[in-house]
Length: 420
Image (tube, rainbow, N blue to C red; front, side, top):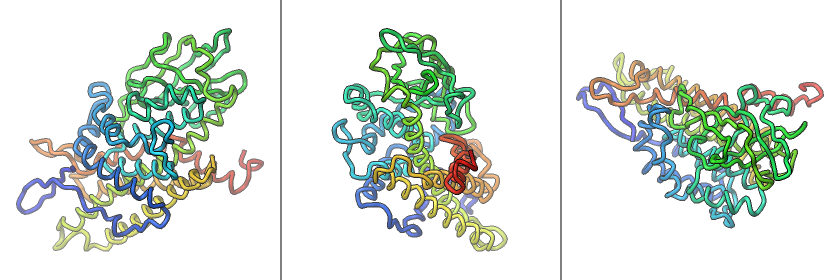
């Protein structure tokens, strides 16, 4: 539930979920029936379990409050971690797993972008990477991940390598030994790492990149102090420090030298998830704003009577609908067997995250002082929209900065010979 303060004549505080405007403005002609059913299932679960704790998560302190274990366990209990995966590892065995996963992310982000990010990293990044492993690796790691018995993490970024994952940029090294591998390096901004049972690590092997499954209790693995961030307070990130970490040969995920392909395929899927999260946040901010504009009176009538707000909200509704179509199209292409659904994935991330930031800014403006307020008055009632403003910005940065997505699209338009 969301607490809204409006200077209504009664002076009372009202607790409510705003009406879902997308249910009458957006007609989903893309999603198969099973995807639409997953959306409704996740919406019910998120409303029941995530909405009541979303405010606490959004305003927490990463170092004091830590990982929102109750949110993670709620997702597991609701069976949401099963959505992306096949039946042989305990998944729902859906015909359209990527599309179903994307709508799940949107519905989670409607209440908490932090929780959506936890789900994304656990399932789309760590889980998808594991899904490309051997049968033994999938049994050992993926089955408990799907059940929510363990937390997964995925590590590509480094202090000097994030959007650039070229072998020359990645400094974490894996050296072959008689019994397996030794890893040395430092990964940065690693979501879920503070509670993860394992981290999928991208490392340099000679002049190529490979991926490894690194149990976090392995000697030489240290998890750093959690970052204090502008937003996404429940998405705990920290460094993963690898100091001469000895692994057996079974830790190699995929083929030696095939790590970049696994990472890029996983991150392409992840960009669809980030696009969906942006749409979820944008829709939530839109719904709160529409409700507020219709009931907040100034200058002799509701704010919604003013043409500025009418035109702006019409534009935002169009942008949100377009962004939703883009991420669904990208996910459906992924479900069709296209491993790298470009240009749709890049377009979806661009538009989904842009509309999230734009709509969050508009929501703060529409609510005025209340939009800028984290807590209101002596009773510390939650501000209605400031968390959207803080949480939305990261979408334009991670999973490949939006400037990189434009470069990806430019390559599609002009070719690599021109763009590089």
